[in-house]
Image (cartoon, rainbow over all chains, first blue to last red; front, side, top):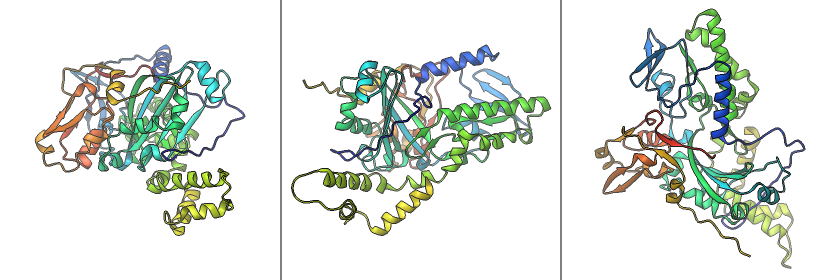
Length: 347
Length: 98
């Protein structure tokens, strides 16, 4: 999108049952209940402050005054992961390895959503925006439907937003005020705002996702994939949690929770189809640091589309010639070819 | 019929978020270091504008959305002045609708 135009590619799946959206506040509670039904004890409202380490391995956790011994800890403490850092598996991430994600939840009746997005009851739609909404910085916008609300948000590179001195939250209004987005959220009522730091470094953010007596899963282990057109994290967090649990069950049979006994975890992660995608698209983060993707190309595509589709009696160029004319002075042919080839190799 | 455009601002957004105040200071900033900080990245990264600058760095922990991004940018681009951890158990932000 540019400031006042947008170009869309739309795909309608023949089988819309494969993906769905969920409200995390409800979903997480439900998932925790399933774990409790299966025999787990759930302790919330308690912060893990530190690890108990002894003889080079993790032996338990410290939460306030309590010291709780464990066979194994699964650290799922988010992108900052003080636990993985404490265990020597990670150092602090670089700003270019993380992004700031922000989201408005916009309430809108289900019938309005279905009518507006052309959906049958129970169906949903997801949009990704690139271009003007991030002001030329690394990032993009998203909008997806829930049953009776929309999730509208922005993701911006932590390095870009801090060094270019643009407050991250201002991108929310930049996206929201675009007329393309305005039409989609019209008459909606914003009911919640939330934010989340997103790890973009992938699994290499840890030297390894396990050590004696401890495994790391979810955001804390970089289990996330943003390949520019899909943003995934929840499915990967779930799958890595399952892999961690299976690894511990196997270790329990051997009564051995040493690093060597837990190393199967990494193999499981690499073999798991949902997580394998992270390795497949491992070069994407570097490609997405090319700022031409956020200013030059959206502008180019929109201007070319305007020239191609507008019938004003001034005569038309063929599409290829129009695109060539639009690139003049904005991007060199070499850069364009290089970006296209790199793109073909990366995705 | 022209539809009403909902005007949003950060203050309006933050008013929609539930916070439970943690009496323990889970963010501590050595603000003396900030005076020398050239880039002041915390002012820009925070989605809730916890940090602001009026001759010196000021911060209010109540609005913290617990992303932890301030810790990273402060230590890598800034003055290594911020120490940040999650609030005490049961305190801090809770998201209910998204």
